[in-house]
Amino acid sequence: MLWSITKIVVFVALIAAAAYGAIMLLELDGGVRIEMAGQEYNLTLLTAVIAVILMVIAVWLGLKVLAFLVALLKFINGDETAISRYFDKNRQEKGYKALSDGIVALASGEGDVAMAKAAKADKYLKKPALTNLITAQAAEIKGDHKKAEEVYKKLLKNEKTRFVGVRGLMQQKLESGDTQTALKLAETAFALKPKHAEVQDTLLNLQAKSEDWSGARGTLKAKLKYGALPRDVHKRRDAVLALSEARGVWDDGHDIAARETAIEANKMSPDLVPAAVLAARSYIAQGSKRNATRLIVKAWNAQPHPDLAAVFAEIEPEETPAARVKRFAKLLKYHADHREAKLLSAELQIAAEDFPAARRAMGDLAESEPDTRVLTLMAAIERGEGADDAVVRAWLARALAAPRGPQWVCDSCQHIHADWVPSCENCESFDTLSWRAPPVSATTSPVGFEMLPLLVGAAPSTEDASGNEEEGAEAEIEDAEVLDAADGNEDASGDQDKQPNPT
Image (cartoon, rainbow, N blue to C red; front, side, top):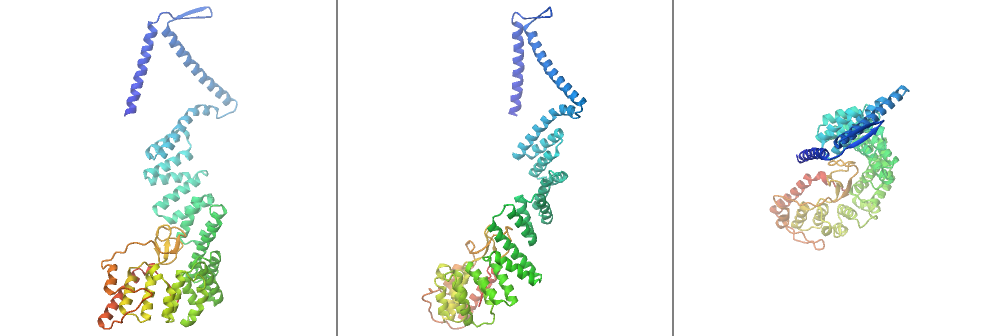
């Protein structure tokens, strides 16, 4: 509104200035005398100004006619596009101006303006490779996905814009949730431009989601080839994909292929616990206990994990608790101060009914890292040493409200998984799971976990665990209720806390 008023005011001012100038010229005395070819012309000042203006216009028209005559002569001499270039020059200027205005409107988020400018540019330029791209992106800004898809399909017809059209359609299908079609389009886009990093990542994620592990490994290899991925990261992720491929083959019943792929995954990344577990089980199935032992010891040395202990126990499933304690010493000599090593040693001693040794193995974990597993083991130790039932119940009550301990947690979204998977089940990020304690969150309960120790008795310190044993039906009923509550709580969160027990 303000701009329109300003233009009107400026126009009126210019007209007024021209009229005032004409009046001034009429009031001035004298004139202009021109002598040409023996003729003399006397002109007033106003007439002279008008003559000058007309002469300028005539010169401009003469130059235009001359340019046209030059184009005509070029056309006669064989240049078939000379005349068309002459007439198209002005159209191109208008078209490129509309195109630049459309790009600015697109960057500003004005979808309607961008589409209008793109249509105008297409009218003058006749270059759909440029204008269709602006139209498609402007339609996306407006939310007109049908129009955007229609324009992207037009881009497929031109070899120069085919990749742009395929990529645009791929993004459309991803937004609509059609991953199968998006996967096919990603494969096409990858074939057109294998160096494109965004297409590589999109194709890799879609292949992992569809469990095309072989294809995903090929895409990962291309990322390494074109410098989009460091060699160490490629080695780790290739191991993850090989492990996923081995698990799929194992489920299909192809044991030999699964064993070879699992062993390959473990060699590429020895610290990848699921790969070590699967490779060790493949050795056990072959009867190669020595190789399984060597593999588990190497993986444990890289990262102690309860799944490794569980597989190590599977090597000799029929051995006695005392023999198992002796055999596990080969494993426990590595990272003896690690939390997992202490818990494993305590579990082995409990199975062997050496409860004082189990207490010594636990150390100060009950004070420094009191999670569900630690507190449950303390309850088992107290029970084995003949402590009072109230003491056992107190440890179990603390276990109910304690953190669950280390689990498979996504580093991107903090989602907790029951088992290791190559891609997060929540945010679908690839290779983001790590074995660690999840972020602590406040626990709320209608009964109040913090009140349980007051109801069943306080847990003593690990250095002074003594008490009188309670007898009678009432104590047994209370003990059963607490144990049932513990079992119910573990069942409710069991999918997030699978702790393999090697004993």
